[in-house]
Length: 350
Image 1 (cartoon, rainbow, N blue to C red):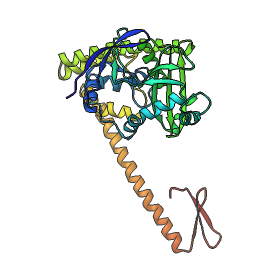
Image 2: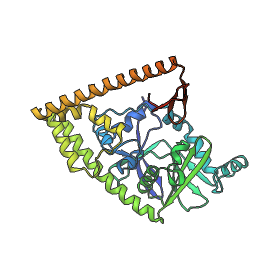
Image 3: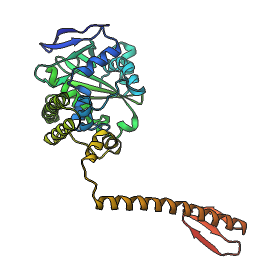
Image 4: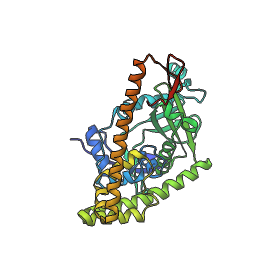
């Protein structure tokens, strides 16, 4: 079993507290990442409401251990991990002239920046809520002075095309958190689009957007981390109904950073798991509710029977028409035309 080495990582003229996990296996690293009870860089966008695939409320219950988080990854995350070094190499050769400009520079062995990728996790003293695994540390750059941050991503073309500049906002929020953690003046996100095209988003502290994003990151992540700490205490102190009551109180207190969007897929988890069952158990079943529930069930049965009868009658009409020499033709609707010039039209769903 590998060991964690705690080091002072020198970057931007300062010593950053860091955990060197270069001796850990992948499973050991995943376990270490899950155990630090901090907000990771890839989670910053979720906390700030910029994630298309996960809501802050789901992340909250993962962080306090109520919902199990799958750390095994999938074909996309594994592929991204394997290609990370190659994507960073593209950024070293990229010179701002086009999506394939790095190709000529690669063959000519011309680099526009020097990037290193040590196996460390940064625990910045000024951001007690964060634990960050950067993809790359830029030590030299032909466009910026000093040292900066590099973040590598793989992205599908259709997803990339949804966003101005081709990059989802959550990646910029992640980059800003890294820049804040390391005191970096600049950073770059490089996206490999559809495995071919290269998109680079460069960010520095002179941009107005940087101040806006950094304030959101600090405010929301600090609040979310406070909610995490309260949630962890509630889980440790209480059991059963008392624990759930305490967690519901935390949801209310931190509703500005713990919330569920209208996403059906994400809402399904929350409504189908034990959390919602606990809530339903607290609702008294009155005669009025029972009558409405019975009526809804009856209507559902009526709809099902009507649909079956509709399909049966439709098929009977088709059979009779064919037997009488009718000709079926489908255009904008199904038209059943008799041979003797009599024409009857039906909707498509017949």
